[in-house]
Image (tube, rainbow, N blue to C red; front, top):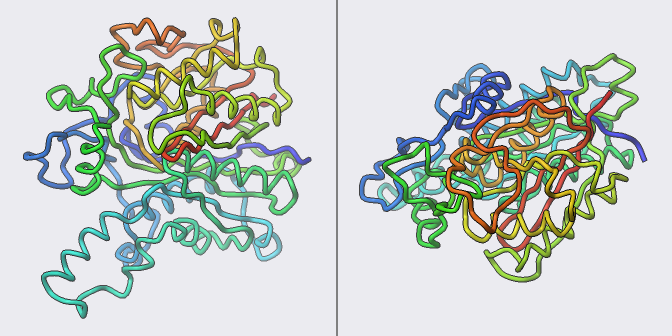
Length: 411
């Protein structure tokens, strides 16, 4: 099968908009978690989130088009445009049918749904915008990016909760591997910091209530973790068939070598006991990449800062890697970004590719009280220079859906 490399990157997250701003913040160990400003959360048990602090759609989207897109689509268009420009590839009439887009979201246009439902109740059906449906359905993230770029190849999206970004990139990788596309713009996007979403996750007891210390609320693998922090943004990779990239002398960040996806078939929200499904998924990614466990030097963990996820992911790593697990660096960048739901896998794939390319591993911040049951090397609190040859990026979602990407450093 054909080899697939990453030649472009785009990102907007609670750490800011743009690759360099995000990389500087994530290697500095900065937190993007703050008090919620999108709505009045003063009466909510949870009043913190990871909002994108500096996003302006106008450099990426014409002013008249902005109102046709809910924020998750705007993030996707921006990150997709960044990745495309970064790649140096140009879609033309001659190659457009081999250029595709695969960007998913876990929930989609919830802010618009809440807003326009209020309009419907207060002012009636005649006041609903004709753009309502296109601004909320999830595949319009890919659709709007394809329109913007003129990409006429495969166009789809994954909708797999918190594994969405990883599945979208993995599926796009397979499309290039098998010759259905030469290039793909792929990743995840999300923006659902709304009263209904925050209240819903809070009702599940899934969110941290550390409202007085927002920057310390997301604490993956720490003994005192008390839930995740909801975040937003988009992470998008420009994937390209290797010979195409070589022929035009493209900058190559990393190679995607393998992909795993499977199901726990266990529980609606809690991971399978002992991380059994996650372990099988990591093994699949290694097998499809032709890698041995000893080849992996870094894992960008799903690491949500919830009790069972962090415990079972740690157990899964031990199952897959055995004694080598003690030599692995395992960090969760969610300590800095919060949990971006459908965008998480996309943003974390960006960080994993950059880690291999630049030889720096992001830290797990807020890891101050070790948990005896979570006892791996989590790269606590400070980034680490390390030349890693291969890495995994893990994503696990509600419904027991799992996704793992295997990356290799490209030389």
